[in-house]
Length: 174
Image (cartoon, rainbow, N blue to C red; front, side):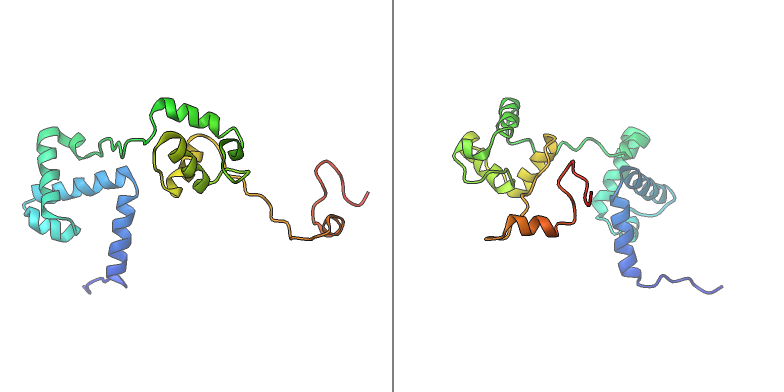
């Protein structure tokens, strides 16, 4: 029988590893297969080579399985980095976002990640990156609104005449 081969094997290997990392269940199955191979007589080093993992990772999986059984192979809680703002500050920030940034001495009319970062640093003494601040909007249930650009010196009557949509509540052409 002819040996099967996968085209672009190295690219596919990386893609498969990324797919495994994508879900808790896939990571559990991956660990389960690794421990199964060790239980079948393969060394941790051989399994590590086969799975493109560090040998210590395979050893950790085996130890966790021996100590905790199947549950030891499941993902635990990953708390992540603690929030920069405490609960009191978080609630105050939610109230702040209901106001115009100009009310806090900022130069824009609408909140965005950069302006929110400035506000948090000034008001709460906490430095957050722009991307973190953008996530804060979502965590608080806000969505970003971007103003529609208006061409400088444009005639509002001419703009209305070529607009594709009618102003809200009015039917076009009647």
